[in-house]
Image (tube, rainbow, N blue to C red; front, side, top):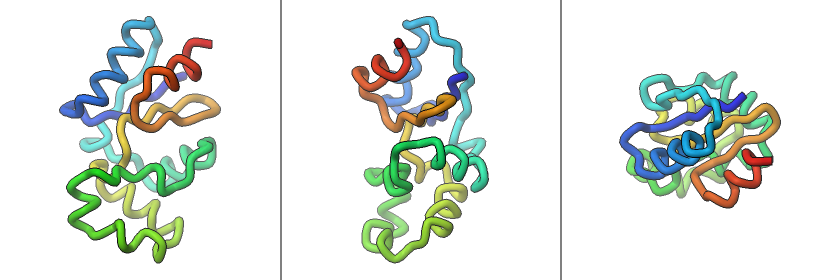
Length: 118
């Protein structure tokens, strides 16, 4: 089961989605801005991931910068970070691909090949 969280206007998301489609992989698409994952959902995703919670933040995004999160990240608890991520889909690194036992953040073709074309 592959769940593909995207922001449809994002070029990187389009590349990731094209990879999945070109390789005939079945996946469910969720617009992470219109349907922001709930805090509990994000916690479950984080728990199956090898990434730290900080990796889930879209650090290049406008929203991240507007909130001054670069300076605040070290002072925030995991709970506070989950609440932030669940408050606005634009804060989440994209695309986010959730597999049964792993999570892919962003799009790197080699990473997708290794994780999805076993």
